[in-house]
Image (tube, rainbow, N blue to C red; front, side, top):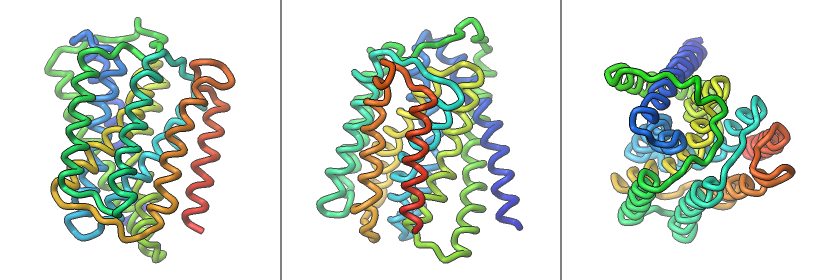
Amino acid sequence: MLDILFIVLGLVLLIVGGNWLLKAAVALSMKLSIPKIVIGMTVVSFATSAPELIVSVNAALEGFPDLALGNVVGSNIANLGLVLAITIILGSINVRSGFYTTDWPVMMLASLLFFGFIYFDGEIQRYEGFIMVLVLFFFLVYLLRFQKSAVVDEMPEDDVPLPLYKTVLYLGIGGLSLWGGSELLIKGAVGLATFYGVSDRVIAVTVVSIGTSIPELAASIIAVLKKEKAISLGNLIGSNIFNLLAVLGITAMVTPIKVLDQGLLTNDIFWMLGVSFLILPLVFLPKGLRLGWRDGVVLLGIYVSFVYLTIT
């Protein structure tokens, strides 16, 4: 009963936090004259990736590396197969060229870098974690200096400027609410899952990863409902990049991460690479530079298949 209460309270905090974070992100992009997708891929992505970072570092330090790895791999699959799917089912997204010239290639580069570091020896060393964080740093410098808006903002006239103190307040409270909500949700979800005797890896790539992807889902749905799709797409792509380069990079710098359950290398990592690659053709087919409800159904079908095959 207590676990269910944790889940409900966690969801409430996540929805409220997503709304505050979005307000702050829009105000910040206006104040600094920065394209919204850049804000989505930096400020919002970092705040919504905080739960993955906290869970992964704690899990690795406490001797549960499969929880740390499975959490990130599962979250990246959930961000695209679940969160993006629901987002574009609710409302289509028109995409500009910056998506396939910068954002998607960097996400694939981060995914392949992670694959190269872990697949052959089953471990991410400290120096490899440092390289991942360094790649993220250079990407962010490039993003802040050169990136153009990659998604059409349908209703820029709805943007409301906020005083600086309110922007900082919304940003802080929103980030804390997302973190606290995720902690409660994970505590409740893992409590329920462990009751049924499920392995660390399976818990990580399903229950925990969905729990830590709830901030992205909350922020993205709120963004779509408010017609801020530039933030919803930038948030998801940026979150996947942050998960791999920042979350696993920082975790590995704290303590090397070693794979225990080989299912992560023989199954989960290929699902992550596959769904990440699939986003590009979906953007072009059947209508060019657009993600619509049909694409959402395809992605959701893939995610349901992944969860079903992982659990069974």
